[in-house]
Each structure stands twice: as C-alpha cells, then as structure tokens.
Image (cartoon, rainbow, N blue to C red):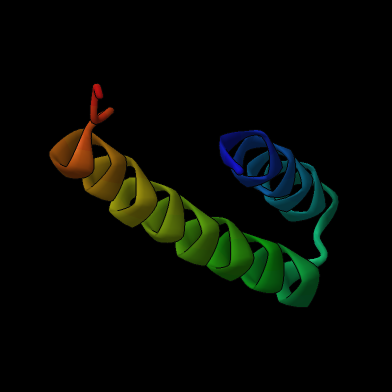
Length: 53
C-alpha cells in the first residue's frame, strides 16, 4: 500500500510540473488517503502483534 502511495505522489509531481493541476490535485488526494490508511493499518498491526501459542 505504501508503494501505491509513492506511485500516486510521483504522478502528482509530474502532472504538476507539466501543468495539469486537476490531475495533480486528484493524485495527491489519493496518495494522502492511501498514506493514512497505511498508517492506521501499520499501527493496528503493531498494537495487535503476533500472538504466540
């Protein structure tokens, strides 16, 4: 999931450099949402941990 965040961030940067403001805004919004979802899942996995039997 972090990989997709970086991909959308790169797309947003390239679109912004080429002058496509709408595409850059949409891609950065998607990257932001994916990053926060990644953070939530990461923290949840740290808290729950691996249970040993």
